[in-house]
Length: 426
Ligand code: FES
Ligand SMILES: [Fe+2]
Image (tube, rainbow, N blue to C red):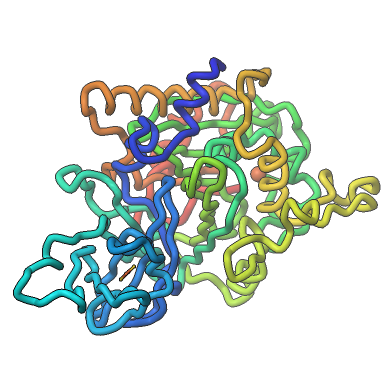
């Protein structure tokens, strides 16, 4: 990859082409429980290189405004959330949920001074246990997000987030590249309570040379990984990728389905969002407990959402388990297995040095799709795919198909989110 293409893809700050692209979507910003009630404590939010604070005012309205006071730059994280606004702790200037300054105590009200002061602000909405933000131009705001995990009844779904200390792209590429599952995650497939017991696991472990086929979808791509099954048939694991950074892991047996978003915090850190849901039933108590304990795609984190296994402690790598073959990487848990290898590349992977092979077709096509969309948005103002609710109503699929059946045809309607219809899984 050329250095300039890597730069184009990884930089998502204000004014960059990829940053502008991300600013055309509703992005997950906070778990709803982070802002539980009116006039509760505000929280810091850093996304796409911008520092902000989020709060719920006295009326329960959500606000996301510039972190720093317009007077002399104090962080409003330290302010007072009271009487329909956030008041700076230094000299008492106060802002409402739209960022409008509503009080400058030192100035006479008649002067109208405070009306001229306004902090940057972005709209937020709550849906599916997540608070979403739109950071783009008002007149290009898409309809609210329609991802299936966020629209099923609450008892059917669980969402978590963790800090990942690297650029969003190398993290997201792990979600597209399912060829690593037979290696990196191999020890965990048969033991994790949220994965074990699936016939598909045996296909996964039995064929370490999957063949990848990638086809375009309206919102992004479908990545099909083909492994040998019985009598010449194929076990297909189909991963949808939807612009700009949504993927879904193919299901295993009747376990809940899961997937991710990778949202840039700045160019060297991202939020790895992980959701789990079942399309037609509530999660069981055992499943929910496992998710809360950091099993499956979830991870145990501290109060700042940093995993307890992190780069400062080498992710608690267990060399004995690695040696004995109980774990391929020696690192415990799917999420941390992914995070450890991706963070180990450094904060921004130098893609000029990589050597891609056929199993990397999915990430090659995703990069092209992202670059093309960012360039077309910058040059012509063309709005990118993935904003349309129809593009978001997708599902991953695990299915055994006869040889010769193209996976997209064979999976058919199973690739769509259909209310009241269970996932297609092996
Ligand atoms: S710095 Fe905020 S009121 Fe002075
Ligand atoms: Fe993984």
